[in-house]
Length: 369
Length: 150
Image (tube, rainbow over all chains, first blue to last red; front, side, top):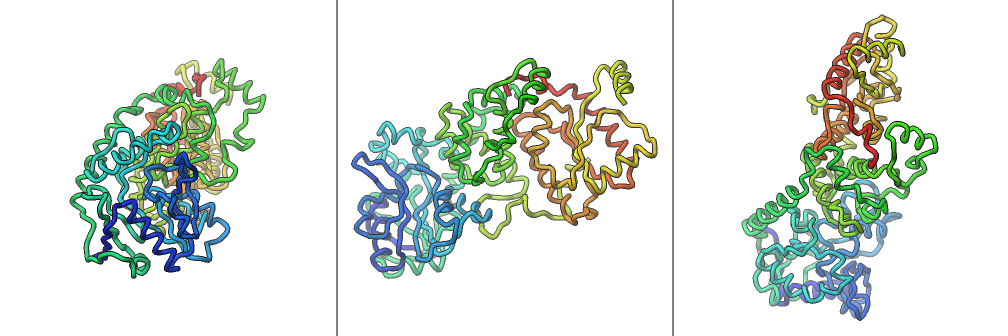
């Protein structure tokens, strides 16, 4: 039995109270969370150290201005934090951070995680046009009913990994009634229990309702299937790929926001990727023409081989794509098939090795001819 | 070599171009042995010597394919015989991943091949070269070769 803590406050206020308690009691020295940064209500991730500044925090705001996994990696790249910090992140952000830890791009030292069974986030455009503010009540209503809103990020609509794997504290929101009046936090680890100790609320022995979550997973799975079917890139060959990626303007935004793409100098931005005059000449002779900038398909396929194995499906890539290419759906589809090959779930466990840096002697006999 | 290539082309119409990444310690020596033993095999293979099959980044294979190679071969020491002890095990995983990706995006995984050829297997090298060439001939030319908007 996992211990759980029932708070007599709605979900948004409940988690805020918990964070304030953690800061006030000195159990943590900082809180990494989403914050409203101006009167417009724009949000961004920040680390807050004074509980009075937490009034502007919106920990479970359904928006992902950047994948927090990537941000935490930058924060801890040169060494872990000395003071204990609690980070409120979404499951895919936590998984991304774990993947980065495996790549030695950060440290878990002194960071504790609060997460939730995630209902998904809205696209960034909704913050630009301001519609997200009106959507919040609708969002929590749909989450508590276990419904999937059609205007969420496509990656979120089809996400089946909505339950955090390694969070210390998990708030149960999907399919939870009375989210505006009460909230339940599951204390998954010893550290989680220790953090919650002394907090005002009712302590219970309880498990996450797996039946409820499975029902929700089925809904998400059918939504995912719909997304994959719409994409229908299979069997279209190179022409299909050109259809999808042809309008790519080569901004490499998808690479920049991708939590798994951590290289400081990307292969595809290095001088190696530039065409020399002689390359242009050969290409022109061979093909009778060449796309400028060249290498769009090379970039996308190459990035698939680089990060497909660890793609957490957060959807940041197609959210930033100015040409509305369904990048995340493609990466999720291909990534999942590769991950299945190695029975790997990115970010499931920090001890689990990335499949490409390990091997078994007796395997994949069928790939050799 | 050039003469025989043009002869073959006259006969069959199409002689594939196969880029082969051969590991220095086994497969390249195997290819050498095929040559010194005067074993016959088609002139379709364009060998690139690498120190180990694990040196082959999946990106190399994609690049070769997009630049118009009709087939791409990776060859290394047999499992357990790697000069660096475990390089070919990593190569095998990468290759399995690449094949899956190629298949999922709707390209032709059959244009990619991984084979283990030891330094003493000149005949196997010739066999792999012949088989793979025949297979590619059946698949036909890599259509990517003529595409402009890549």
